[in-house]
Image (tube, rainbow, N blue to C red):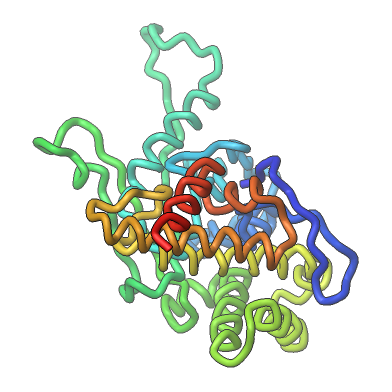
Length: 308
């Protein structure tokens, strides 16, 4: 989702563009109704053609667990939340539970809940599209009840996750050319990263996709934004991997052991300073991009100075 933190960045010698922090190429693609309808049809084996039947109800500027939601929609009797994840997070059911609660509040508006008439609601459908490297299953399901400290309780949220790394879930990707193109683009970037630096790896992937007619119209018109967002996204993914040894993605977590905390702190400081250098952005925006406060960065930097 979009936030108010933006920065100017020049990409491949092109005119500088405003880049929205922590947006996603995935969201750029599927916030368009035609592509979103294509994705819905692929998932549900339907054949809707009229985008007027689809209502995008994404809640803008909403953050849960320091992660932003990608896109949500209502079509027929379904209320769908579609998200993209490049790293495994065990708390997605909790995230969806909180998000759907706000969606239903918005949907109901001023409806009187004490009425004797049963209020009918669109059915929630929560799907995550995963292209991380730490899980290899084609699909997997997460349940909110798995997080309950006691008995199973009275609430359940189910999250269905599809592995969209290129080569997985072929049938789904074949039904949705946009999702297939996105998977190919990500695969190209990763292959390029084995032999070149990140900015060049992303730029070359965009050029090659255009040459092969993969997401061509989208990439031609959105090239600068896609390159800038992808560079930031891969830097963020790297930062998450080196900073959170136990796979947590809910923000900077202090290590239980002094040695782990020191190591994570140094990684955090390195990534913030690298972001400032590579993107020419302020300390405040670099910290915001990695979901930490300036005070946390300064504390880590001071601690590192005392150690050295």
